[in-house]
Length: 184
Image (cartoon, rainbow, N blue to C red; front, side, top):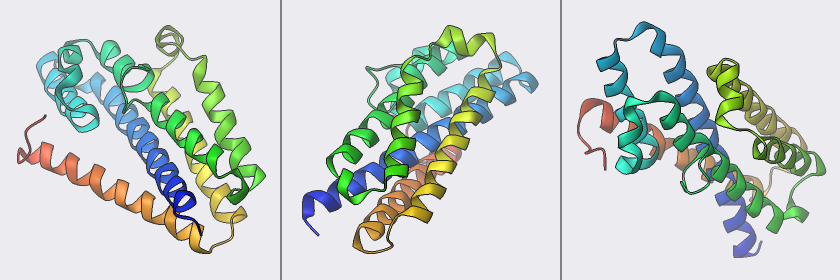
């Protein structure tokens, strides 16, 4: 296997895991706001922002929809949900021959669907349900990947990227929650 192929599979998987993590955190945070005071909600938004993008968008902590916009739909935020999917798709495009048609089509369809989404469109409906739907699409993509790809060298790079990203994201959450890491 060529190193560029392994690299693209690895990063595709990392970006997909990052998108799933972002969707999960935003869905949980938006659902929990109902039960929180304004001060508690702002403090927890600061932790979510720190976990997903550092202090870059900390000024948005007082406005949940501005924070959600920055973390999910902001094309200038390299770690936003839409950019994670864009980077995953770009890496997948480079190794189309290594992916099944179903994997490519599902990833491409999810990416294209999110290109037209706006914060106003999410706000009209329950915002948390939008992120739950994205998570379901990512779970489906994971299942399609598992069942349609050969479990050879390429598969191992996909798994390596997924598990390294998951470990990094979860350890960052734990560090921020217990106060070991500074938000930046």
